Image 1 (cartoon, rainbow, N blue to C red):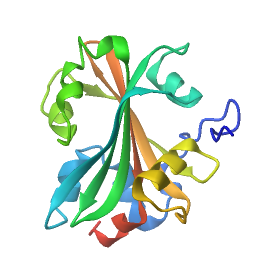
Image 2: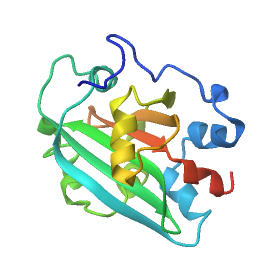
Image 3: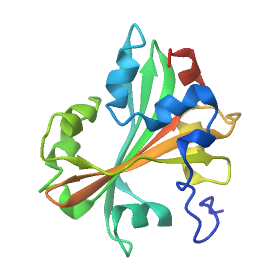
Image 4: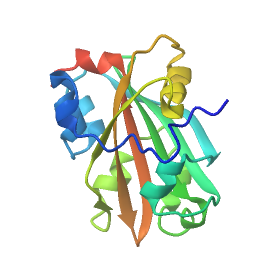
Length: 184
């Protein structure tokens, strides 16, 4: 069964203002999410869920500016604050650009991607987009599987594309229920 959203529908066309008030700041702040979480918890860690060839959704291809299915490389991680998963993040890039513009991605392992993105003056970020994801969306299921929870409510997410040397890297960050335990 394919769980991707309705054909032609991109769930990332909402504004953060439609989200519950405690999540609006998380969805709209375009600074480093990793740094923001670190500042609000005692211990930050990252758990690598998967890394390798990936299968994008149609709206992800469009957000990357890719018009046909090519080989994509993905990395999925959980960001943990004091041991609790607070964000499920998914990064996608055309496999052909990994050796050139995004070569550091293959060797990150359990390290956050933020250092690569926010410390490089050649990286440009697109505006943030927001979405409310539910069980009809593959990303909701990926987040549920990563956390081992099938009882998750609808989840808010944000995404943006980062460009380096003209090559896009799409990052989707899905906010898990425990994010509400961190100060806004």
